[in-house]
Image (cartoon, rainbow, N blue to C red; front, side, top):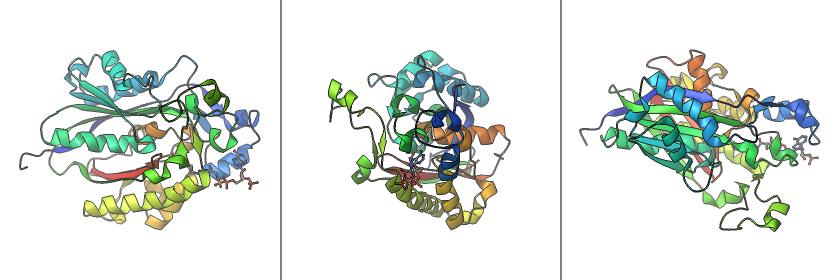
Length: 329
Ligand code: UT7
């Protein structure tokens, strides 16, 4: 194991479709108000793909941007991983569509399903293969087109979700930099707190499943909220402790963008000052797999990532899944 190399993020990218759905638009669609949505979630806008746009279409611009910023040609990629629960098709993996469109002619490709925790899961699945030398250049994408699986007659979910994508190039980095430690968890006992009941093998698509709107996301918002607050704090503290660090060492924290009240609660309990948190949910809502890499891209473009910074990613979501990673940028 003395040949292990450090693995870090050497390029990031982000993309959201141009169409914007505002709180005022939603007031015309369901019984809700701009005031309720803003005060209960912090969200004002979300970006929504048009009918012809699939998840690979929003993932590609993010992927190209990450490659360009890493100075890496697509044919140098060894692997493409796509974290999503809204693939273009169930078969084949959307990562293959992206691999082909990029011209990543030497790369393997697969999708990973861990809902909102997908990006963190994906970097942790891939990093050890780079550390051991099996792969050198990896592209990890998190992207979801939630608008395609959102029930726009259900006010408890439709105000929260949007479409977005982010990408990161993972490569060997100098010793002491890159991924320091992580903490990943799952609890399938919470499956029905956040799921799509119909359309697959448990309840294959039929006229009945469509009439029952079972192909849309169903969520027990209150239960997920309580889980999220606990999960966020636990994951950050565990990952930091595995890295031999504490909350006071954190320079920047990129949380899953679900609800500002969840983030504010965690920020207080962890004692990590507000200005260290990257927040863009007011503009994009919850984009699930896209959430963390899209926010990371915003942080990059705003000049908030500096060499040597301690950066934390933290997510929670369907599965249930949750986890955090600590990096030295
Ligand atoms: O990616 C991970 C995923 N998901 C999350 O992180 C979501 C976690 N949960 C949440 O963010 C919050 O639970 C919600 C934003 C979904 C809901 O906020 P809440 O403060 O937990 O509200 P609530 O569900 O307790 O509902 C309070 C009231 C209810 O009315 P009554 O029963 O008190 O009369 C709801 O029917 O608000 C009502 N309500 C709404 N009112 C206006 C629910 N949705 C809406 C709405 N507009 N869109």
